Amino acid sequence: MLRSDFLVHNEVRRELVRTQANLEKIQFGVTRGVVYFGGEFWVRIGVRKLDGEKYFDVLVSTLVGLEKRVRRIPGVADIFFRFTNIEKSGGFWRRMNAKPKIGPVIQGPARHVEILEGAESLYEEDGEEK
Image (cartoon, rainbow, N blue to C red; front, side, top):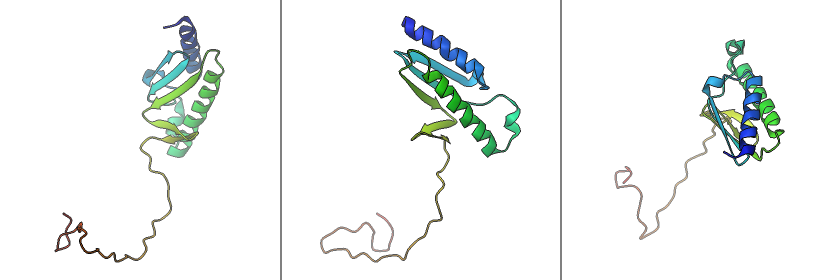
């Protein structure tokens, strides 16, 4: 580990301790100024008793604050978050394995498709797939 990476590592650890995160489940490392976070990110104060959305809002606000403070550390080139329970995608935080909210699916009428002569059908004669 380079001396500069060692100094960044110490500063990142200091910032993690200042947050309300459960440090037992977080791993992090620094390579050439790039900070990598992994594990699970949970807040360890009594807000876990809140409903899912409010607790998620607390997680996101804690992560946003942590990211801002880590980016201010001299020598930090970039940050990668690889948490198993929450991810940053397109600048927004979302739960892992969460299905995107989409509107109701509207199914239109089925269309009849003719099979051209000489083309192979995907279905056998009785209507089952090959």
